[in-house]
Image (tube, rainbow, N blue to C red; front, side, top):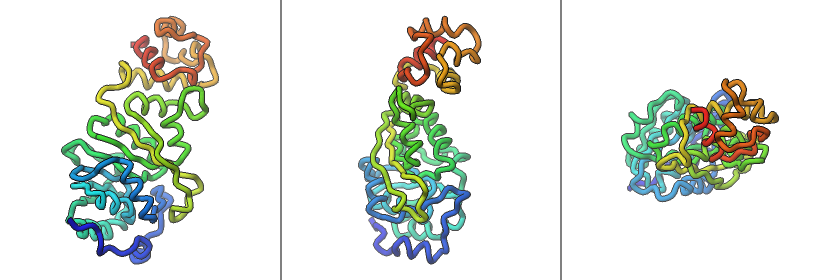
Length: 275
């Protein structure tokens, strides 16, 4: 199995292809191969596994995933400038890499993967949250998701109740997955350096959601509750119709509570009260 021994350093690749990170694509290239290796290893043992990557760019993380032994790597890259250099990476790793020139928000993962896969990605900042929400809805397709976000978004995913970062993303992620923060990455590690710190998060989808609730209803309840997070729930839930106090009582929640005080289990109870 070839492991990329013939590939030039990433900085040489960027110079050869005249790659400048495009702000409109949310690009920041990670060139430190020690760091990309560390990210890939967060996913666990990759030998023989199928992996999906979004936004490979010059292929630093791509190389790391293939070096860790992934049998099949499907990379989704919107930027046509990167396709030729990624073809070189594929050739040097026994063609275990397939590159698709697509928009990750538009693709059908079901058709692409064919079996349960890991997602490992340095996500473009401008589409990171919509991609996560899309994948949470398709979580049955994935064994794990090792994703890099800007720190502020990562903090929201793992946030506990009664904290400033706690909100809709925390509840949805923690209801459907085991979530854990892996490590932070300094802006200096990227080309060009972003203005913010990045954080790698690992999400492992649960076989069943943590508590019983209908996702559509849970999302509506959580959106209403956090839409006016400073208000008491008896007021913030009014847009949902009906008598909020009755629903709250049914769920065993004080009407004077505020959204950030409720844990995932209580939100699920509230969603069941709205069924």
